[in-house]
Image 1 (cartoon, helix red, strand yellow):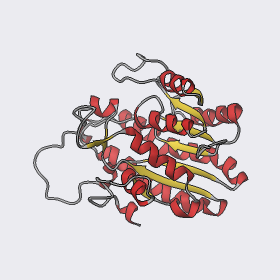
Image 2: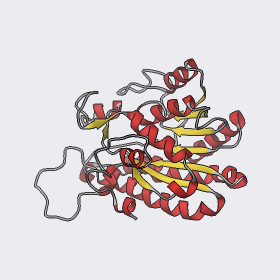
Image 3: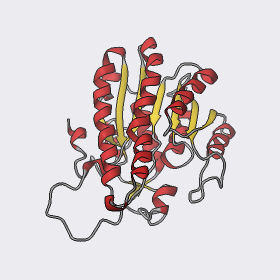
Length: 283
């Protein structure tokens, strides 16, 4: 038996990277997975490999069940339609993984308002809308799990003085989005605790090698020694989506740290292990 037999799970940003890994693992554990992203087929994205068709076809080839929903989550009506499509295909939603993101690693002085607004509309805004839309299903059944994907970028640089060189990948906007998602996650966890619904935020303990991190040159290669595979995040998301409510809800945590704590791996390193995470992770 799989850990998610009979469950309906939505995974956003499922065309590549962490979202793809989560969708595949959940399907292998018995979930019927709704895969959402903008990239439908290989080549649709001009810069990055990966697509919904690839993710879903690989799930189905392995005997799993998945539904492809192409969507732009920056639009509220698309968020609402995604939840409706999931219900129509598979029934009430049990698990929501908010993984999708639009990232611009640009200094604030060079960033346009349009870039800021697009990114935030997929970041905290779509996370809020999707959570709101799945809650009726979960409240009615008295159970459910929401995992919001965050980042160590939420930790921030601390106070000055600073070096005079601009960081290679300026993260003021991205870090602020992830910090907002962490605070939102803990607040929502408190609101829905009485209904038996867990809400958590999960970040990688180490850099994850994905098409995106390779493109932005955050990772040097698929074998970057500073990195962990996307499957580590997928495993941690599975843990947070399946462990009992009182053991996980309200956690802001890191992949290897939570996996080691629960005995799913023996060795761990990185954020949350070798050095502390964000302030929300320590509350």
